[in-house]
Length: 461
Ligand SMILES: Nc1ncnc2c1ncn2[C@@H]1O[C@H](COP(=O)(O)OP(=O)(O)OP(=O)(O)O)[C@@H](O)[C@H]1O
Image: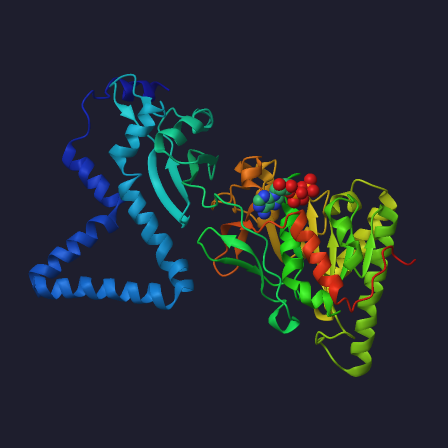
């Protein structure tokens, strides 16, 4: 204590000299110093025309990569180039500090009067519309000071919204949603006329923030959709059904629907192989689904096959569970327990037999959906708690930009959510196409027009 007092008493009022601050900055930003340095050295050593050639060649190489292989370019090059550009254009020291000062997000050394700003440690730009900036807090600054100022900072930086995470003590990560890529409702997907035109492994659902199509395989994958009431979960399910329409009509895809809410999906009863509404009937339907799965397994054992080929005899089965929470957690405990066990078997064994599941839930916690890990495809639409985001999309998803808890609760943003891009493990903002009541009637009429399936409105015990 005595020692500390002594040290404080000799603290100077003068700032560290400019040349040493420059040296410190150089050490912290080696790339930004070495690159111009290397170019200058190359110009002097190899000549300016050769250096121009190298720079031009690099630019041509990048353009070729951009055009020839969008997947790898978007994964490796684009986020780095975007982050670097923004680091030095938007989040550059003096400019960024000006915004922080305007929002009172700095501290002042009481002795020297020197202003101390949080330091930008890292900028990541995983997608065109979201940046994540890690800041080392200034001495005497707490995370709380940011919590209270996020709205003002968002307006000052002219971004849609900012969310915050605390990666480790002394640091904050600001997740800036720069713009809303989806300003229009996406019309319902076209229904292909013929079954041959449909690949169940690649169904159009809507669009991504990159302007590309959001497509999803249903063939052998289980899909989990989390979102608060009114988030637009149904639009994902209905987009898939419109994409599969001719297969359903021709009896190649069979729908098994558990609809405890009895809302929009009640209209699908007439094109479902099985449809059940209350909890008990839903449990019987899942029993029947499991029995169907077992029958295919028995067929595999007797014929020596290991994989189904989609046909009327061995169709693709899709079990739709609207509000799985109502079935697993909110209702009768004994029914919930049996359902959990049966759905876990479907989750782990249904892939090979052509039995997939699409489950929607409002509250994606482990207590509500203990089997959520069995769903390889997860979609997180607007949720009510920030913890729900990582629960659905995996640890760190929110930090990497999946601000599903910040999607406003209004009709203009319904159908918007996040999925994890498998190749890069980064979240992408997506919007599902919207199937309104008229489009839903068209779907039912289309399927009924040449219906070759077998429909039972209530499950047979
Ligand atoms: N993809 C979409 N694009 C535009 N608007 C949509 C979209 N999906 C839904 N909406 C709008 O949001 C409303 C609620 O949608 P929906 O019923 O699908 O939500 P939900 O998540 O299923 O809610 P709940 O869990 O209460 O059933 C719809 O009536 C519609 O007005």
